[in-house]
Length: 602
Image (cartoon, rainbow, N blue to C red):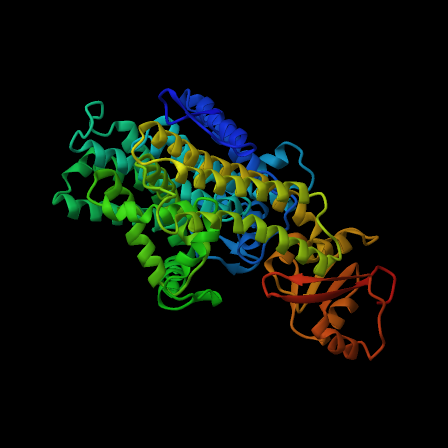
């Protein structure tokens, strides 16, 4: 017999076999410990987030192509001292506002001040704003959930969001999406309080406070600096749907729109005016005309996907919560007239449909919707809607096992095929994650044995399903450490650019000039340096080596014959060679490095 809490009330008794009983009991105690106070809940969420996001933060190579583009542009801000214009080498990068670049530049400058060696080429420093954004998004999800759930279930909802694979990935990438999600969920939490407070649905709840209004508008303002109109679009569309449902927009006055608009202008206007003057208006033409509208009209940068692609990808991107979230859909439809459910659906459904309709599709676009999905899933759990006795429910919940098993097998196969090695150090964590996922499914299925008419049985069944979500979170933490912390260092074939930079660093001369023929990945620019020259022919590569001084030219295999012909057909001895797999192009790649040293003939 083990004790499970059905919520913040007294525990109930239920029979669970070991090791399932012990695992669910431990999950129950951890949740109970965290739910004892807001401070404990926040500390537990931070611990889960750090355990999930820190492994691999510094060792994971720059991930082509978007991440090194952001990092390189931030590096060039430090190199030039120009904090207004955004550039990748000589090219203007007028696609996103300046917020992420300022945050990354500040993190790297702090690293330099603290004495981090070669701070400007340490990709982990550029990822710190994303890490902070992901942690903030978790805490803000907890805050938003408190408007709808008690403390224990709000903690569970935030933990479920913290465990999702997409957030784990974005926390490790020097891009906009983790910070964007934090801004979005801040706006959502404030909007929730204004909506639920409008009719005084609970006696203890009054109109939204000034602090709530400030959170909303700071989320909007910072979101604009990070990714332009996306956070206003999320919040504005949700507010529009709720206003139509209510037949009035007066409830929005609780958010102090006059004060908020002034605050937003004070935050965003200085940079937008500065970039408009400096670029002659070109920033807005590029950001709106080519970047945003281009993605609406066509599948930009080969990222086309059919309608429904996000729904299919959801079972992987929102793992481990996706299977349970799918089971909550009938509940959401039945209860769509309820205030809390209507609010969550207004945040999720309209933007999800827009993303499905837009031809350009990337998995992280829907990340700001996932906190609301997590809250809706836990809300369904509290109402008994995640019922394993429903036809097919246990089969759907069984999907929670597929991701850790698939990653364990897939990564082991990839490591063997690409590097003739196995991630032996990672296997214990990967297998433990698989085991916890199996226990999560078993805990969910355990509730099927409870009789619907027994109150104690209902509490026990809910406790088991609550434990299933918590065990899924634990499985995600272990999987994250196994994949990012211990497996990816084994995959040296994916680290083409850092290995080429190591050849440059091993030359017996200082500050060599470097050029590349064939390989043009942004990660190479970031790791080699802003002055990396991009060549177009073997003749240019040969001429570059003859110009004197300390030089290195990188020649991709498909240009090897052309380069040799330009050198008079005489085979040169490379200073080094790298073979690997271009994860962006999805194909093997080989690059030879040829050096010209002072006083020597190449």
